[in-house]
Length: 359
Ligand code: NAI
Ligand code: MG
Image (cartoon, rainbow, N blue to C red; front, side, top):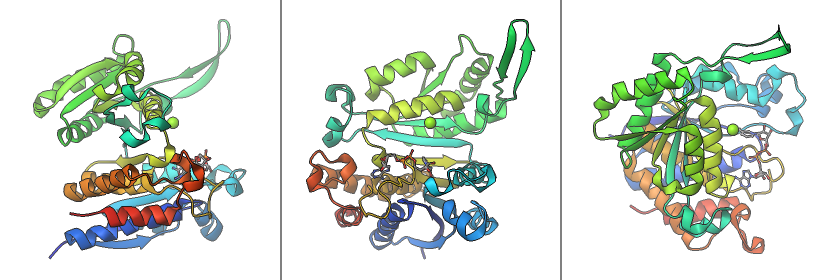
């Protein structure tokens, strides 16, 4: 009998519940097509949890996530909670859950769909064939290093420190090698080894463990060059692995190649196969409750969950293929429509994708 997979669902605020609802429909369709079995458990998280429980991340929600195979997250936040003190802000729950679940790596694909090439600001011929993944270290580096101010010889100084240990580097690099092994087996490791000591340790670590992944071809790219090449020849990249701050910037740059935030999926991973999956976008308070949000980012996050956590590669392909087919047929939600008057809603888009899923 098929093993039951426990999926913790934390839909959150704004359009979160709307887009998550469509993603669950897609998962249920794979139960029919592939005989999988999912047990969905829902938990409060974000602004709604603040309202109902007085904290953005209730303990029972966290326990539910810990006892699951994977987490599906919508989005959190909204103007209602913006002026709350830090411990009562939805974003605090977001950082808290990543930390509590030990999710040290953030994986963001940037795929250019041929039929959406006109949605990007870059020339279509430059974008042709772009399909890459940025693997970003999420819990170390300069964002987490010691920070302070002091009085220097020439007045006030501010200091940020960047620290990485071998363990932190090795675990993220191994994960990137594993992602690359499941794709076209090319890994670009991005650093600033000509200047930074942390980058030199990063590069040494990559070189030391590379022989264990002999089927993957590794290239070292300096971060400034990578930023240029992403705009020049994005299709030459497959998997990019890099430290926290470089990854923050490069993953946003890569996202812009694809045109719309409503299309971008992400995974956050720790040790082992467990992962948290969510669209890159936020709770979109400006369109919440109207049924017009694009559910594709969340649906593609399910495909990532299938591939990276559950090992359901064939079903992941079926989902991605269905999305492509629906877009190729010209169906668009408002955020990606050229002619806004022809735009369809969240549920209609979800239904079209579900119906396009075939084995
Ligand atoms: P946002 O991503 O929510 O919205 C930016 C713009 O993109 C808006 O015009 C929105 O309507 C549009 N948009 C976003 N997702 C869309 C979709 N699926 N379909 C169609 N249009 C879409 O970012 P914003 O406005 O900066 O933040 C809104 C709230 O979300 C804030 O409270 C912020 O803190 C929170 N946020 C939460 C995140 C998360 O839960 N991971 C990430 C980013 C922001
Ligand atoms: Mg960013």
